[in-house]
Length: 334
Length: 280
Image (cartoon, rainbow over all chains, first blue to last red; front, side, top):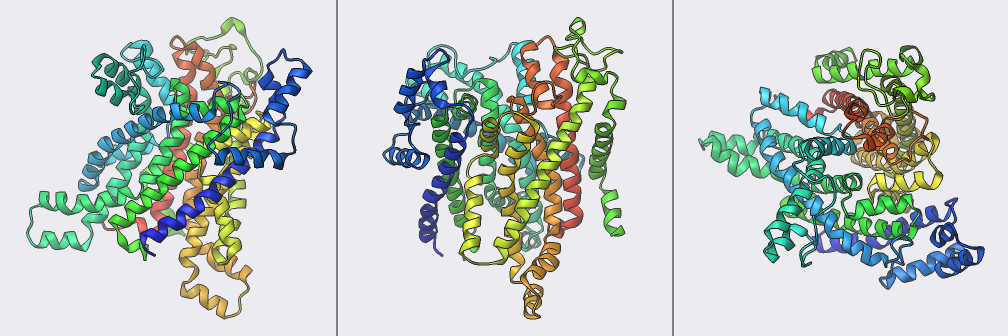
């Protein structure tokens, strides 16, 4: 199968997958014991007001009809109105997506910057004290509850030392929106103060998110390097008398990196799930915090919107990673 | 078998993991005996609320004046029950689905795997929060929410493993000898793919404890009086930075427990999965 037909085949499945996802969440949202119209109308609402809400959101129609009309709206790019923010959900999601992406990409960058060199060192110095120490740390990194780690970091760096802000994304008004990434926008606008504020706010959430990811990068890199060192091609290069640093740089590193890249989809999914919790603790105005709040407030249109958005994001990421993998190692595509 | 056990015993990390899990299980079973204040699970003593650790209350007291150490011990019961039942149920659903879908190569098995893909397209925690919120906070509902979102993971794993050995000679010869599909799957395929399942079960319990604690942290676990580690950490938030000990103990408890299961899982992987034993 060549890559074009692979992409076509995968894209063909995106729609039924998203459809199934929406169906599951839709059924979930309509078996809730609480009456959404009641919630939307407020606690003091009269029976008549509740009835009006019911008609406005279409809760009085049978379920399949409601789902069909929801799907029709989705197809035309309308995800409905959030009962909580009273804004179109598309707008809510669009304004929050960059915040989540900024957090995830920063965490990914941190995780690779920390994880790759350490993983390579571990692989090259296998069974040294450094290898053992990092094994303990990386296994530990995967066992920490992220919300607890977030709180401990807040306690130390914000409450006790006062070095970094407790929560939020920036102090004062954000820079003019160009990319939606505050760091980049501040750079583009040339606003040093806003840049440093954004960076300080980003530091703790990104670190919390990056730590378990870095732990898994260390493990993948270590195994990749060990696998590469034992591969026949590297043995051959060594026999040819190339200096060790050249072999490591040109051959071992490349082989090891390609095995780590294949785990990229896994790590990104991991970061996305972690962001849900981390954003809640740090009041980060991203998709994850939005999802948790929407679920807890039974704002089900918003939950559906979030599910659709995340589902699409995950499917696209997986497709891109598979393409990357095919480019690096064409054998798997046979 | 004894050779496997000996290899496991040589793995210091895995033994360390066992040294965490063993006492933890005992602590959970004997919580009513071990806890210095076994009634603090429901009672409250406002006169000694938010006290720092002392000889009387080893790990301090919480906002209701409950002894955190006692509540921690009972919390171990909640955590282990929740994780144990969830992973057990997820295995019971996921393994047969994966086996059947992996054995038969037809439209039905394709459809089954597409269903698992739907579940895996969003982070497990999001669907679990949604289901737990819909059903209402209780231990049973938390188990249900985690199981419903966890079985697809097992179905995927078992499916992939089954597919990878489906066309091996020993399977084909069993079929050629007239073995029924049932017999082939249970007696030939299942034992051959048992190793990755065992390894993943241990790590899966650790992962489930983390997800369950997150549900508890968000207020979607067992209801308030029940001692649950995630909820204890959530409660401590409004008492920071003064009551630093409040979240410390339950957080470390989660960490050590998950660490224990992960280390044991790693140990199993080293002895059961020959692929990970490359080179010297």
